[in-house]
Image 1 (cartoon, rainbow, N blue to C red):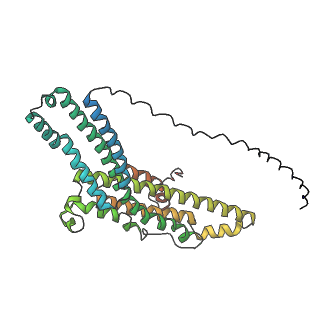
Image 2: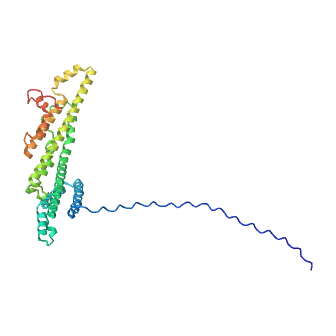
Image 3: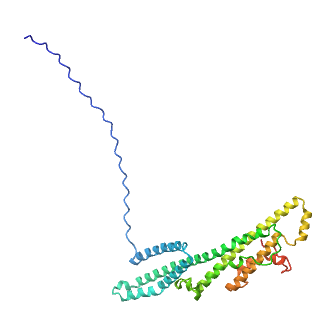
Length: 327
């Protein structure tokens, strides 16, 4: 056998170069929240630590009562007022006396100390003041509720008086407007809630005492009369401005002769008729104040209201001299 030629040996494979490893992003460390400060050491006596939270709770409670009162109906507001009044009496009377009796019967000498007694007295007085504030708030809500119903009956018909007499050639008014007797109907119904006949409509536990009811009714009448004054004044000012503008326009159109003829036929202008109508209405409104609520001519808001239309009394010949302009 002939020897086979030696095969060329293949060169050894080149060693694989290691791939460069990208540098890893540094791990982000989460910020450590600051540790809560250590609670301050308690200072003060035990009674101070108990009274302060109670005062804060009562302040929050007073806000809650105000919010609740704004969303209640009239009977609910009256019931809330009676409940608050009962609570106030208990805080300064029955409840305080009951707590004192329990403390004197206790075997714990600490409860009978003068400091604890003073702290309880202070807490009851504070709570009573908070309730007193809320009584005023609820009373204002009651007053505003009734006054709004009266004002809603008044404002819209009052504003329509201008359209009745502006350029309509209607005669001088001789009677009050149709809506005047109904303005104070809501106040009359409210006033009757303490009478024996009111038991069917107003539960006994919801009725206000006579002094509180009288205060509320008077406050309602003040609000309504003031709004009456403001709305009537605005109406008369607008009517006067409109009359001045029409007069100026007529002069520009050179109709002086026609104006003189119209003045000869018509003693009162449209604005004067509006004055007279509002004057008659206010007089009847005053009669309602007298007959239904026992008020006289010295009721200050009514005196101011009537003074607004004294010109009408001069136009009707009730006073000799023309009064100064009240607008």
